[in-house]
Image (cartoon, rainbow, N blue to C red):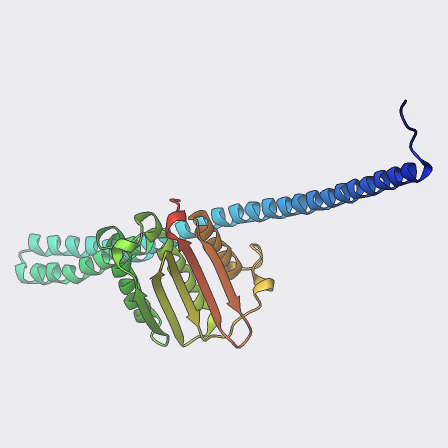
Length: 272
């Protein structure tokens, strides 16, 4: 004959069921909170990506406009001047004045030389051939020399503690684009007079650090994609780093300069 549970046993069972129900209720509430946070984060991330996509399209159009302007203002003018010089020389030759026509043709040489140099500059700014031919270390040295030419008041202290073979080919373009964006931001916004540039490998980690002694800024205020050109630049560098498998950090404060750090674990690097 089955024994009937006592009142105390029934009461204990009821309390256990109530506790279990409370736990389930709390778990369900926590799950709803987590789901809500994830949903909000997904919406925020989607908005960030939409803004970034818009900015990328605008940046592409601005770059095309800049290149078109360079081609028209510099190359176009040089070629027009060369055309005029050749026409003048031909007229002088038909008029039996060979000395004048020879001088006109000689004057053509520096014009064509200047046009050639401008074409080389435009191409190098788009993608330096040295990156493909000699690698990232030579490209960094070339970039720093060019940077010094344009921004003589900014001292670049360069430290390279990595060999060319330690940088995967898939990462070289990413490193250069982050360097290019960061250094241009420094020149435009920071009012710095010294930049410390470091590319190194320690154990299994490749790290790029760019630090300036400029005016600094509030990272929270400017990190939004839509906030400014500099905000877009920071977002672009962060996206490049993370898409290639790395981590990106930027720290700054008013009057204390800015430090950018991008790091990649060698086994986690991806092509983009």
